[in-house]
Image (tube, rainbow, N blue to C red; front, side, top):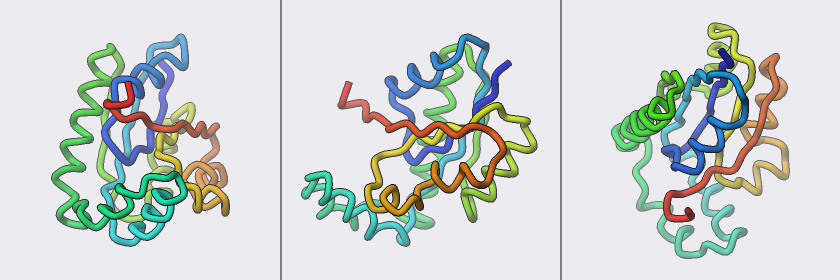
Length: 157
């Protein structure tokens, strides 16, 4: 069985599930780590929105729940993602990220003997430019290949 650790920021769309479950011919097992939204990255999200020409989304960044208020939506997003992966016949477990995401990632990779890490994220232009995005930083923290993919929204399909 091939084990992938998925680092995500939002619920997996149908296109995301199809993509990650068809990357390998083996039976798949996933550990999903979902990072709830935090106030500390609001500015970076707004800058990314502006850089991508999504001005309306930048204006509404402050409307999104963060911190404690983001935990319930994040838990629902995680459950949706796990259910979607299991519906394909894959094994899937997961947890919300509390604390530093890369420390948790390293621990999960070691505990599960994962074969790879997949970072499924929206574009983060500022972080990517400075190589401070999860995928770039994870490559220096874990001893397995790290694949970076861009997440889809259900309305994009």
